[in-house]
Image (cartoon, rainbow, N blue to C red; front, side, top):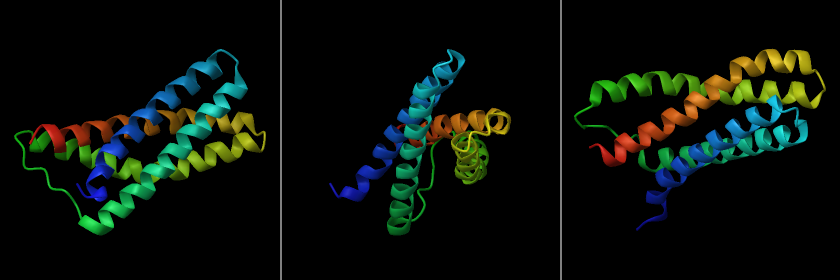
Length: 137
């Protein structure tokens, strides 16, 4: 099997891990464990960056993967929300992280309340898109 063919599976794993680290980060901040929160969020960001790099490589080499399965309207609805939110997630994450690193925790918390659910949605819907493309065709 060509290594390019493994990228979707790797990206699904990266989405899953990102969602796990995002959840752990939320748990830790609610427990007041700021250092653990920071580690989880930076890890989630790194995983998401790796996802983006792999996604761009695969897309550049193979183009889009059409979904022709029985749930096409549902797939298109999910993809129609996932794609634009995935485009803004890195920007929101960078702003959120930069505010935390500067110690601007009031503004960090305000934007994190927007960034977190979007980032989590993108991670989870990424898994759903992968599942539909590879298992519900």
